[in-house]
Image (cartoon, rainbow, N blue to C red; front, side):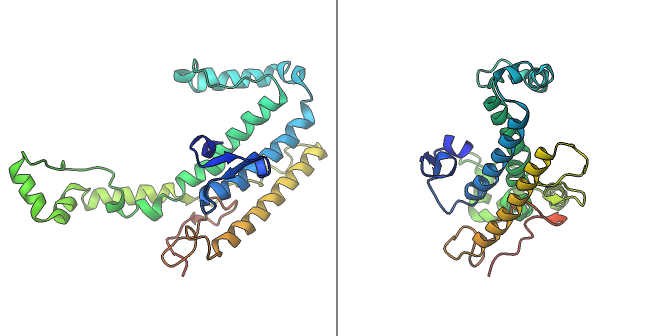
Length: 254
C-alpha cells in the first residue's frame, strides 16, 4: 500500500489487510482502506473462478500479452525498471488488477475531484507567476516588495483572464459527468453469463453501498476534526457514488 511506503501505516496482524494507520483521523487513508479492501475482495473472488494455479496464469497467452503490452508499450520509458511485478501466479494477477483498479478509481478520485475546493481560489495555488520574488540586490523591486508584500504578490500571480481560465479548467477536472460509471456499477448488463461472477459482483456492489454509508457516518463524527467541524469540508472524495457536478461543493460542515 502507498500509505505504508510513506510511513503512514504499520504492519499489524490484527488489523484489516494486516496494516494499521498511524493516524486514525486521516480521511484519505481511512476511507481509502475501505475501498481498497472491497476491491481486493472482488478481484480475489473473480480471479479465483478462472485461475486455479500457476499453469493457468502462465498458460494464458492473452493475459501474458496484455501484461507485456502494458510494460513495454504502455510505458516504454519504464520498461526496464526493476519494480515491475511478475505475472506468474493467481496471486500476481490479483495484485496487479487490484492496483490498477485502485489507481484509476479511488486514487484518481482523491487526487482529481477535490481540486476546485482549494485550487479554484487562485491565490491558494497560482498556476504561474508573472514576476520573480526579488532579492535584496534588486533594489527597486525589493523596495516595492517590502513596502507592500500583498500588493506585490497580487502582481505576481495570474491576471483576471488567466485566473478565470484556470478556474474553468479546475472546475472541469473536478466535475463528475452525467454518464459517470462508479465502482459497483456496470453499464453493460450482459457482461457475463457466469452466475458465479455475477453474484460476486453483486457482493462488490453491496459493499460500495455499505462504504458510502460508513463515510457519511464518519463525516458526521465530531471527533474526526479533519472532516467535521466549523469551516471543515466533509471528506467526500472517496464516496463510491456521486451526483453529476463537483464532488466538493465548498459547503463546510457547521
